[in-house]
Image (tube, rainbow, N blue to C red; front, side, top):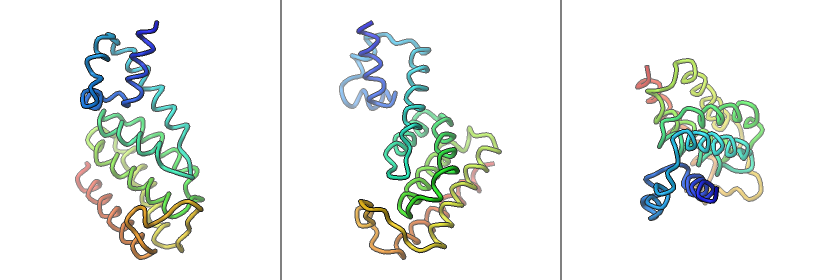
Amino acid sequence: MNEERDAKRIFLSYGGSTIRMYRAGEYEAYKAFGASPEEEARWLEELIEGLAGELSIRGWDAAGRLEEIARERKDARPLERTIKFAARHLMSADSLVKLMYAERIVAMLSALKEVLPVAKLHESIRTAKLLLDDIVEKPLVLDAGHDLGAHGMKDKRALNRRAEQTIEALKRVLDGGR
């Protein structure tokens, strides 16, 4: 039981990424526990659902971790959870949060475009495009604690430029994806 708990702790702390475990020197210890693929699948589902529960209009850390899982595992579930959250909650978020989520959605789409069903691809593109259009069309809104300078932007013009670059990346996904 302790071995399973230790294996799960390592698995969750590295997002299930054996590459990251290896780089941190934890891979051999993890493999020694002998976690089954079924256990790993269960833990990954727990991780995805836990991160989906942490998605917030106050920040985007959980979305970044979901992006890593989607990219590394070619798993569509993180994108689906992020899209569901974005469609329901992000239109009331500040401009920076919208951009951060849109960028993560586009990164997930780029990684998953070959494995996503066409309907999910189009729904995800639509959601990201709505966020990006909202950023460009509306005045700059920033919540306390969110600073454009921390993300390499100094004003609304820079924010719009980055949103437009993300729109171009979204178009490349659409052109390259089915």
